[in-house]
Image 1 (tube, rainbow, N blue to C red):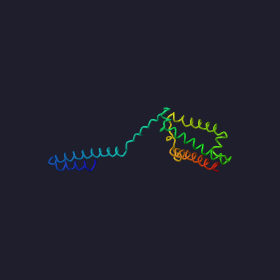
Image 2: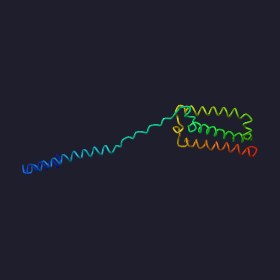
Image 3: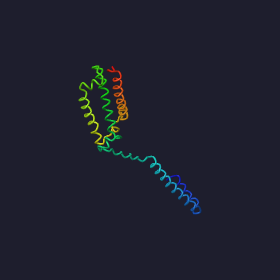
Image 4: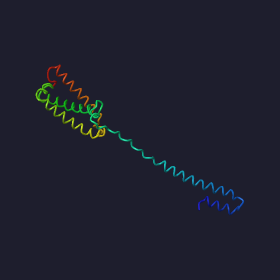
Length: 174
């Protein structure tokens, strides 16, 4: 027996019926206190475990031809950027190897290489887009989709600057 129940038994045996209403009140208070403590424990247990948040729904990616290749769609800037990165590296590499400027490279058989590379990279970029795969979903810590876009933008500017500089200079940059 707990100390509370023991004190009740002693009080009943010593005083008799004179304090019986007081004892009933005391017993009711004990029962209410015990029930309240149990409810508090249940509340504490439920508050200790936070509910699992539901993940936000993934936005649907449109895979229609006109949506992928729209002016503000994912295709044009990404594909042009990838082509510009390859073109800039190839143009500088050929200048270093042969000493030819970009215009001489195009005149000496560069068009078939350009067309072949354009078709291959365009298809390699469009196929995942038509399947609904986004570049953002494949981004890592170092190689992000934003870094790819900025590198592509700088490569486009680099190609234009290279062609303009060689035109003004009248020969190869290097």
